[in-house]
Length: 179
Image 1: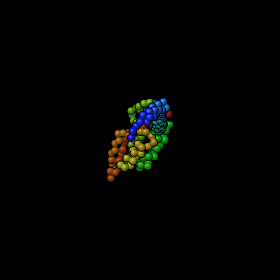
Image 2 (image 1 turned 30 degrees about the horizontal axis):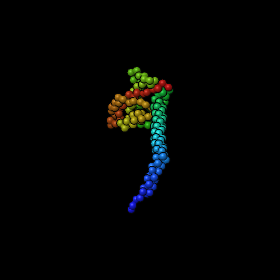
Image 3 (image 1 turned 90 degrees about the horizontal axis):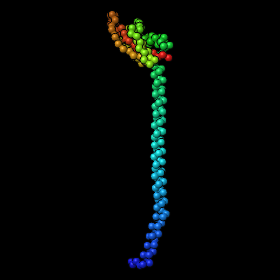
Image 4 (image 1 turned 120 degrees about the horizontal axis):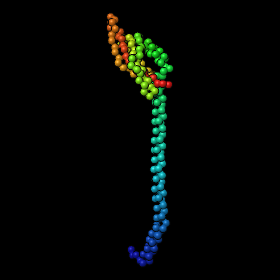
């Protein structure tokens, strides 16, 4: 195949036109499309960041609500001074349910501590019953509605012929809120 001069001129003009067309019309539009693509990617990333921040804010808000509920629940766990009578009636009821006989409830000699509107008052409970009954009573007392601490538990046998009856002594610390 022979290439003549006229074909070369046509080919050169066509190539020059194509280069001119590319540089004048296509190249600026390609640059514009790349800029739009970059802007789209940036906007898309910004939307993702905003979504993540919103999720974290919502999570923090929910965590704050959870803590607010926990604080309310803890506040209800403290015994109020006006509830003392009903607490001791409840103590008697628990003893009856556990088949434990409370012999005495005495305040402990040491003075109650007071921290941040919460007063600690220690009482000594002397009771008698079978081992399982005493354990059941202590568990029900500890797992009850009000916050308290049981310490210094002493269990001894009574002088009955079967040695099945026990006498228990325990110190119970009550946490009493001002209001």
